[in-house]
Image (cartoon, one colour):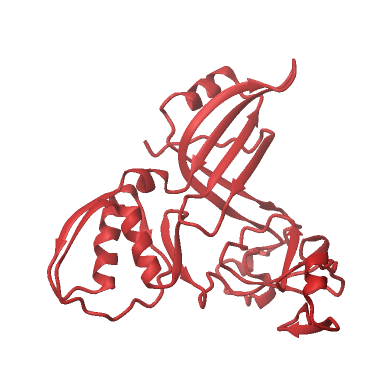
Length: 283
């Protein structure tokens, strides 16, 4: 009904599963020691959506009243930050189920699982006949209309093929299956993210590179993976998203040992090669 409750003052544990597939993101939360009334409201049908807004507060500078209403320059490195603060929404989704439990004699919890775009993914259907002369972009527009009743809008979209089909076509079934077909023709991946249908090809990114180092939240030492990749861990940063870019600004990286099978298959001496800043072994 457009009304919600804020649970920021309680202890909350959460986990968000986000992969590069069309299946919705899933968030699982445990909220501890709620009152019986609040717990019953959550377990009932009063609430249908949940948002997770997280981050870190910094030291807010003092602003004189004479500066109110004046524009201030923003440095490129402070993207996503404001007056020493860095927080934002990292998940928004439809509540899938709720339950209660107890960790110990003292602490009770309310568990919530939510999916981003769950209603649209599960229930949006299409039943449409298109005349000869349609394009992939036309099919995309028709499919997006079926998502609209569930509050889904169009986000990033790659360039669509320009092929004009000489025969008509009947669209009938789940809208998500039609969107899978569209993404395949565009050589892209799609997913619902924060109420938007995001479709991204390999040549696209949803945000510019965010610098990660020990001063901007990098935790521990990055670890190189076989295949010229790298695994990194950092503090929560709401600006980092799947299909976005990061710039690793750190001198030390754990090297990954090659498996014995790769060493045995090498035809000669193994050497390091630099691939756009990533070291990988060839030979």
